[in-house]
Amino acid sequence: MAEADLNSTAQVVTLKPAKGWLGIDLKELWHYRELVYFLTWRDIKVRYKQAVLGIAWSVLQPVLTTAIMTVVFGILLKVDSDGLPYPVFALSALLPWHLFQLSLQKSSISLVGNANLITKVYFPRVIIPFSSVLAALVDFVISLILLFITMAIYKIPLTWNVLWVIPLTLLTVLAALAVGLWLSALNVQYRDVQQMVPFLIQIWMYATPIVYPITTIPEGTFRYIYSLNPMVGVVQGFRWAFFGGSPPDMTLLISSVAVLLLLVTGLFFFRRMEKTFADVV
Image 1 (tube, one colour):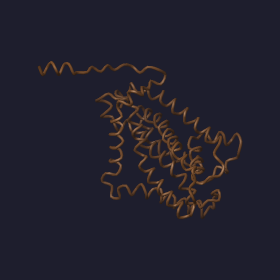
Image 2 (cartoon, helix red, strand yellow):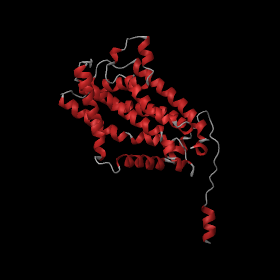
Image 3 (cartoon, helix red, strand yellow):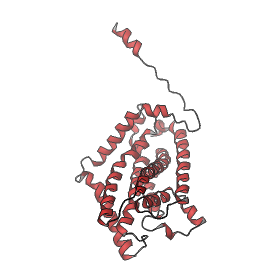
Image 4 (cartoon, helix red, strand yellow):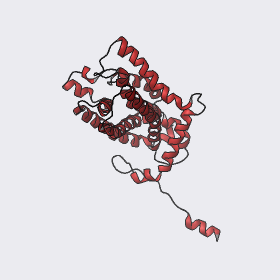
């Protein structure tokens, strides 16, 4: 009787090739939502496990980076900061940048780091870089609190524009995921990618208006080309959300389109490479 009950409740799962241009099954991703939570929580715990200062690293990194930038660029080089105190000017840009940087670092090596899962059990592989990006949101929230404290110290009031931080944060996450899909898939085939990522991030930071204002870039065609960097619109959007002034307009629009293109092509490339992950990783 027990054997009959067991057979009656058994489920047969049939794996079929992905259909469609991108091959993304949203129902399947929702079905594996608990795995997303597990992998995200695991990445958060691993990041701070057996660390002497623990989560204090999330505070020290933006604080020390802001302090160094303030001394070098704000005091010594006297870089323009759009009339804002330089610590606030720098920290407001480092807020989304650190989210992007950490997400990209983790997602780019996520597939290789989870080789044991990929080779043993089936699940949508896109979950791995996605959960790595989500795990970086913890540091982002801590940095956001630091920015609010810094703005209070300099007596800079908040406006309703601050609500734009929510969609801008989503845009940052999508930008990191888009680039992470490309790099994580490439890293499975070419391990040089993980050596290239730190250098890429360093160059990318100076190509983003973090230590200098976007007004340094000439208006017109050159600035539009510059805005193809997805983080340009994000950083400008964050500064506008916190401090007001002229909205980013075309800068944010162009950067958003760049994120969308990177995400669509990244999903396409990732899904086409996915069938070889278990054999190569």
